[in-house]
Image (cartoon, rainbow, N blue to C red):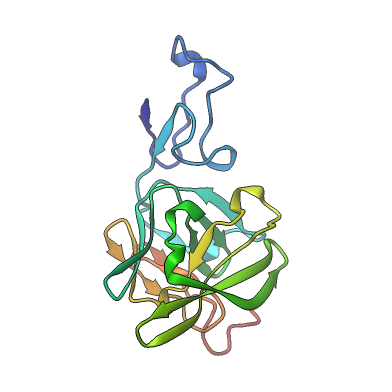
Length: 198
């Protein structure tokens, strides 16, 4: 069964659907992962979001929008079962389930970083005909939020193209943060010169 839910709309009670096992009924957002369970929550893209309305600590959201990462004619990752992390001053970071990433094109990196909210991240390089693109993506093998475990996020500025739905996004400025800037997200954004202390 598919239920279409607009942003901000209250989800229907399980009692609204006779014959549905309440134990299997899964709510959207913070309590479930998109596409699992009886209900698939089909969400519309936002009309507008300001990164200054995003929370701190960050919020993790399950989304069913098509996500895609491409490089040199190859699909590195594609899913409609993604996650996004929303944090004050940052454009969203999008995460792919590991089974939706082509690891045959990636090579483990020795790089490790630590986030106070998410834990320690590991990285991968991208193999190309011209050599390695270093630290092109990362994941949290032991995150504070179990839903993020092993989900992979890509630096949009280190691959050829990243898409949310049919829109090609812009990378967050700078070489540390990995946010994706879409047309409905407004800044100013952290990441450029002089913004590291925001």
